Image (cartoon, rainbow, N blue to C red; front, side):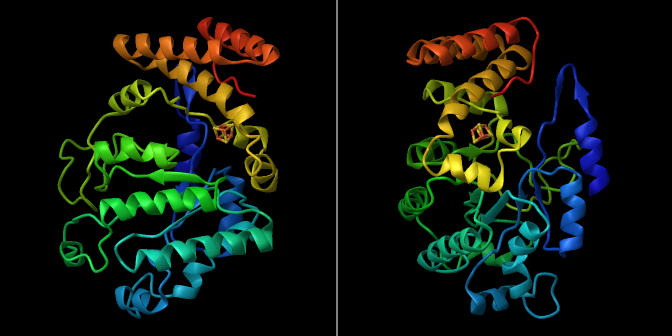
Length: 320
Ligand code: SF4
């Protein structure tokens, strides 16, 4: 894994490169987390699957790889002890009563804040979807309706306003677009869920779960532009060392938006110039003009105008 991270960080495409690698890995001891930290990972993500200890045992019987509930539920304590400040929580909605899962997620966040002074950087919200060779997915034990799912996102957004809310491509295009309004801040695009699918012609067999949104990155970006949200590829905080407690100090009172907006616009412009189709580029640049004209603070507007000019002239990777 460490070698894969190093290799990925080393890839260059023109002036572009991968600026932050978040990893989702099985629970490990503190010593291994230290190795991951040395490789400069971004967020460490691990799904608890369900916080219900009784159901957890049913789904992961003794002798199976995930059988140890306690070892899994304490994984972020070990990650943080090793110095990894950004951690990502998540459950698989549908395994247990969603009301219990929401309370457990909040309690877990509260525990991390109490012990390490820093809550979760992100929380992911996957719902069970049909998957090959997984009979449980055909009869979901605690299925969550669309309305309840929207409620779940809204409640977590209110309870933990500082945390990033991640929605995967399991959800449909309509659902993902609507859920931006309730507080979703990060979505994936162009995902494949079967091992090796990014490099093989056969992209559909052996999927870990079925996707609800098959759009490419370009199509997702285009929809976000139409909604007048800012598609952002920002990694500014991580690069500036605004992680852990430092990040929370800015995120909790909402001061982080002073950085998010300009950084989002810079990375969005880089994407438009380097990767977008002419149509997306045109409407994206129009949105940037509008956003810039809405900036009230003169000094910020000046700094943003200068940075956007620099990007036009070939500069990349600018951030506050
Ligand atoms: S500045 Fe905002 S968008 Fe950029 S990394 Fe920090 S929190 Fe995320």
